[in-house]
Every structure is written in C-alpha cells, then in structure tokens.
Length: 132
Image (cartoon, rainbow, N blue to C red):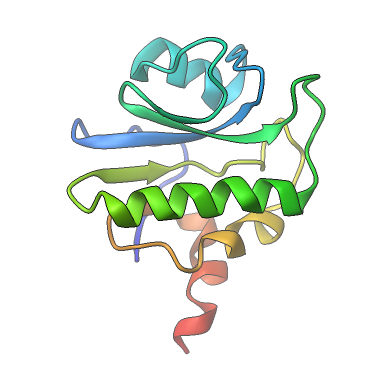
C-alpha cells in the first residue's frame, strides 16, 4: 500500500477522494477543497466528479451517518478503484474530521484497497494489520 502525509496535496494525475454529505454541500473541510480545486460538484454527494471522488459520511441533513452506511459507500468506491486501475486515488482521512469518527473507525474499511490508492500515513497501522 502507498501512503502520503496528511494535508499533502495530490499529484496532478491523482483523484482526490474526500468525505462528503449526501446533499453535496461542499462547504467545509476536504469537501470545500474538493469543490474549489478538484471539480467536486454541488448537489452531488457521491462518486467521481472532475478530479475528485466523494464518499458520503453525512446524510442529506448534514448529520453524521452510521458506520455501516459509510462502509457501503467505501465498498462502492473500492469497487470503482478496482475497476479503474488506470486511475490513481489520493484518499483523505474521510470521516475523521467534521464527521467526528476516529481513524480506527474508518481506516479498516479500506483494508482491501487496490494498489492504485494512496492513504494518509495515520492509517498505515490500520491498513497493514492483515499483512502480518
């Protein structure tokens, strides 16, 4: 698995993967950066948008979603990443900012990520547990 420093910007060829809300109101945190710099579309809370990919961690009312619902969207993203090996994904610490989850709550959902994904170094121990 590949890792990057948290807060670092993705390379030009990488897709910025960020935590969003289902309403697609990209007004704060990584979602705001995705809208300003990477083509995230307002009113689109999930999927590929420009040079970004939204994974919802909050619902339409901007309330934090349950972990099992977030996991559904993470799994959908992982399927997309596997189906598109020519794309490179720069995954932020989704759910660990405004949604209020801890790294240990979210990071393990990405354990089966393909090689075309890069993650924040803070997630390294959670993602490599199964490699031992």
